[in-house]
Length: 589
Image (cartoon, rainbow, N blue to C red; front, side, top):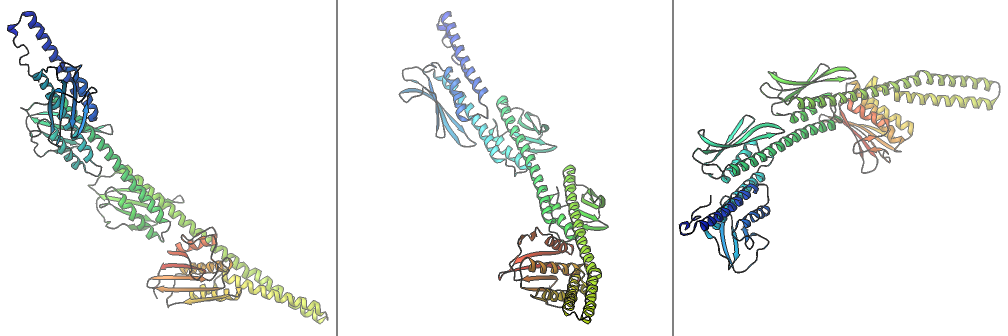
């Protein structure tokens, strides 16, 4: 409050009329000062920039001066200058008040000027200028507090750390920081300054809401014998509470986005990997590898997949009392199994979000299983079709052509006996062509019906395949067995044979190869089948991904996946292509 001394000084020495006039003038001046301070208090919001606050001060300070029409003012703050429009350098009377903000070292002055020949009401105007300087100091403390809080509460911090940052900057900005304490209550949790104690106190508080829901409050306390600067400190506390609200909302959005990113990454990695997985066991382990880290508490979560009576578990899975989420796996309208996720019993679930993720993963597993079933069906149909054509060639067409050959030989004998040599030569030619056709039918049937494979096993069958290719196409084709081992799984042997057969046919028909080498080796636990050619390569084949538009190469991939193998098409430096298949050995030497 401004001092009132001498407002009515020397009243006894004047007449009543003069005394009343002086009193009225003093009251008017006093009212101007109070109005000035009130308007400045009211308008100095913490969100205003320094320039606007200085202009607000000038707007209300100048009219409160004794000679407002000739007064000017200037505010200096750490090298920055703000002045009224009529400010100019020159001989003047001056009043000033220092501005110091201890918690950030800001310093400056508020200066008021009159022309040199104008008298000052020094005590009264000095008191007004000092009061405004104190208001400006307090406002600077508030905005410094808010600036430091906003700058320091990043989304990477925990709620505990954010509350401590708020206390660190809020307490020094209060009127009596040495006596003030603060408490933040959030969702049942309580954070307080170190010196906070229970007891009789003054209190200001501001509610904290996030996502339109009340979640706590910010409370500031002084000892009961300390006064509050109620409007100003309440305004600061409200601003800090609003900043905390915004941080909580952003933190919630950030955590939600992080969870969503984990889910999207999980699904992306699972989908990317399932297209390349080699076996059901590997597919399930691939799912666990990406699903568990995407859960709310990955360090405690475990998972299990049940499929057709088989059970696959993630690491650390054990029997215990647990929360569980599950999703059914249905393929071709038939229940094949379930995907389960478990947490220890005392751990909360993010039920809707995690259930949605588990359902999506189960859906991906369903699609993968459907794809595997379609691949198996396609390979089975292709194999059945080859066998059917091979059987038809061997049992029907080959026999009919052989019969034609026998009849042509008989006709040759009869025509020759009748003395018609030219007609006999024609009949002999028909018989010879029929024999050639029978041999070709046999070769085709042997390719479609691998008798050697069923009778003697994979190695002799590949040896016979190489010999048959060399004889049929008049090119060089060798089979190399690099070491001794055996394969007793008929399905694996059949698929390896068909892949080698298709690769050799492609190299001849599409790559114009003149030399082929089919090799089979077992290195450690890895079985490697290689078909190398010297052709011009395969058009339409993506050698990086091994994809192609032709059905033959697609079926080669299907066959490889059926036996848990990887299939690659590798350009050779010396020209041509290598078709390379690798798989874990299932039968030891």
